[in-house]
Image (cartoon, one colour):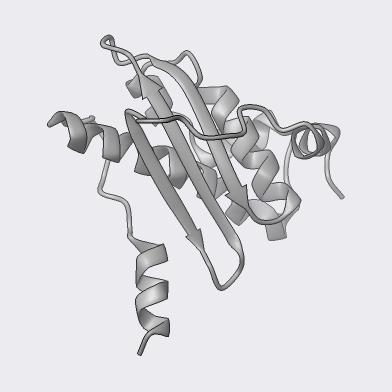
Length: 145
Protein backbone atom coordinates (compact mmCIF):
# COMPACT_ATOMS: atom_id res chain seq x y z
CA UNK A 1 0.00 0.00 0.00
CA UNK A 2 2.72 2.50 1.00
CA UNK A 3 6.09 2.84 -0.69
CA UNK A 4 9.35 2.19 1.15
CA UNK A 5 10.07 5.92 1.19
CA UNK A 6 6.68 6.73 2.74
CA UNK A 7 7.28 4.12 5.43
CA UNK A 8 10.82 5.40 6.05
CA UNK A 9 9.64 9.01 6.49
CA UNK A 10 6.78 7.84 8.73
CA UNK A 11 8.98 5.62 10.92
CA UNK A 12 11.98 8.00 10.89
CA UNK A 13 10.59 11.48 10.24
CA UNK A 14 13.11 14.22 9.52
CA UNK A 15 13.01 17.74 10.99
CA UNK A 16 10.42 17.08 13.69
CA UNK A 17 9.99 19.79 16.30
CA UNK A 18 9.56 23.52 16.66
CA UNK A 19 11.71 26.56 15.94
CA UNK A 20 11.62 29.27 18.59
CA UNK A 21 10.84 32.66 17.07
CA UNK A 22 10.47 31.30 13.52
CA UNK A 23 10.80 33.55 10.49
CA UNK A 24 7.50 32.05 9.36
CA UNK A 25 5.02 29.52 10.69
CA UNK A 26 2.05 27.97 8.94
CA UNK A 27 -0.68 25.72 10.26
CA UNK A 28 -3.12 23.95 7.96
CA UNK A 29 -5.51 21.08 8.21
CA UNK A 30 -8.96 19.94 8.97
CA UNK A 31 -9.73 18.97 12.57
CA UNK A 32 -12.75 16.96 11.38
CA UNK A 33 -10.60 14.55 9.34
CA UNK A 34 -7.78 14.70 11.89
CA UNK A 35 -4.80 15.87 9.82
CA UNK A 36 -3.17 19.06 11.08
CA UNK A 37 0.29 20.24 9.98
CA UNK A 38 2.40 23.06 11.35
CA UNK A 39 5.62 24.07 9.57
CA UNK A 40 8.24 26.38 11.08
CA UNK A 41 10.80 28.18 8.89
CA UNK A 42 14.08 29.88 9.81
CA UNK A 43 14.98 32.10 6.85
CA UNK A 44 18.24 34.05 6.61
CA UNK A 45 18.87 37.55 5.24
CA UNK A 46 19.37 36.12 1.72
CA UNK A 47 15.92 34.47 1.82
CA UNK A 48 17.41 30.99 2.15
CA UNK A 49 15.63 28.49 4.39
CA UNK A 50 18.30 27.79 6.97
CA UNK A 51 16.18 25.41 9.03
CA UNK A 52 12.70 23.92 8.92
CA UNK A 53 10.74 21.89 11.45
CA UNK A 54 7.27 20.41 11.54
CA UNK A 55 4.66 19.06 13.90
CA UNK A 56 1.89 16.97 12.42
CA UNK A 57 -1.13 15.37 13.98
CA UNK A 58 -2.56 12.80 11.62
CA UNK A 59 -2.05 9.56 9.78
CA UNK A 60 1.22 8.02 8.65
CA UNK A 61 0.95 9.62 5.21
CA UNK A 62 0.51 13.06 6.82
CA UNK A 63 3.69 12.56 8.85
CA UNK A 64 5.59 11.23 5.83
CA UNK A 65 4.53 14.09 3.54
CA UNK A 66 5.42 16.67 6.22
CA UNK A 67 8.84 15.08 6.66
CA UNK A 68 9.52 14.96 2.92
CA UNK A 69 8.28 18.52 2.38
CA UNK A 70 10.74 19.80 4.99
CA UNK A 71 13.56 17.92 3.26
CA UNK A 72 12.59 19.45 -0.09
CA UNK A 73 12.66 23.08 1.15
CA UNK A 74 15.63 22.98 3.53
CA UNK A 75 18.54 24.96 2.09
CA UNK A 76 16.38 26.37 -0.71
CA UNK A 77 15.52 29.99 -1.39
CA UNK A 78 12.03 31.25 -0.64
CA UNK A 79 11.28 31.27 -4.38
CA UNK A 80 12.56 27.70 -4.80
CA UNK A 81 10.38 26.63 -1.85
CA UNK A 82 7.38 28.12 -3.66
CA UNK A 83 7.99 25.61 -6.44
CA UNK A 84 7.57 22.63 -4.10
CA UNK A 85 4.15 21.29 -5.02
CA UNK A 86 2.11 18.41 -3.71
CA UNK A 87 3.09 16.54 -6.88
CA UNK A 88 6.79 17.05 -6.07
CA UNK A 89 6.21 15.73 -2.55
CA UNK A 90 4.37 12.67 -3.89
CA UNK A 91 7.08 11.99 -6.49
CA UNK A 92 9.82 12.29 -3.87
CA UNK A 93 7.97 9.65 -1.82
CA UNK A 94 7.54 7.40 -4.90
CA UNK A 95 3.79 7.92 -4.75
CA UNK A 96 0.85 7.83 -2.36
CA UNK A 97 -2.38 5.85 -2.41
CA UNK A 98 -5.17 7.93 -4.03
CA UNK A 99 -7.01 8.29 -0.71
CA UNK A 100 -3.88 9.90 0.82
CA UNK A 101 -3.15 12.49 -1.89
CA UNK A 102 -4.79 15.16 0.32
CA UNK A 103 -1.85 14.77 2.73
CA UNK A 104 0.58 15.99 0.07
CA UNK A 105 -1.74 18.95 -0.56
CA UNK A 106 -1.61 19.80 3.14
CA UNK A 107 2.20 19.73 3.02
CA UNK A 108 2.23 22.20 0.11
CA UNK A 109 -0.34 24.41 1.86
CA UNK A 110 1.65 24.36 5.13
CA UNK A 111 4.81 25.52 3.32
CA UNK A 112 2.86 28.30 1.62
CA UNK A 113 1.20 29.33 4.90
CA UNK A 114 4.62 29.58 6.59
CA UNK A 115 5.99 31.58 3.65
CA UNK A 116 2.94 33.88 3.85
CA UNK A 117 3.61 34.45 7.55
CA UNK A 118 7.27 35.25 6.75
CA UNK A 119 6.23 37.69 4.01
CA UNK A 120 3.74 39.43 6.32
CA UNK A 121 6.29 39.76 9.14
CA UNK A 122 8.82 41.30 6.74
CA UNK A 123 6.49 43.44 4.63
CA UNK A 124 7.47 41.69 1.40
CA UNK A 125 5.66 40.08 -1.50
CA UNK A 126 6.62 36.61 -2.68
CA UNK A 127 5.82 36.12 -6.34
CA UNK A 128 3.05 33.59 -6.86
CA UNK A 129 2.12 33.34 -3.18
CA UNK A 130 -1.53 33.81 -2.26
CA UNK A 131 -3.02 34.30 1.17
CA UNK A 132 -3.77 30.88 2.64
CA UNK A 133 -7.28 29.88 3.65
CA UNK A 134 -7.91 29.97 7.37
CA UNK A 135 -9.54 26.56 7.22
CA UNK A 136 -8.70 25.52 10.78
CA UNK A 137 -10.18 28.64 12.33
CA UNK A 138 -13.25 28.41 10.10
CA UNK A 139 -13.85 24.82 11.22
CA UNK A 140 -13.56 25.80 14.89
CA UNK A 141 -15.90 28.77 14.42
CA UNK A 142 -18.50 26.57 12.72
CA UNK A 143 -18.46 24.18 15.66
CA UNK A 144 -19.12 27.05 18.11
CA UNK A 145 -22.49 27.87 16.58
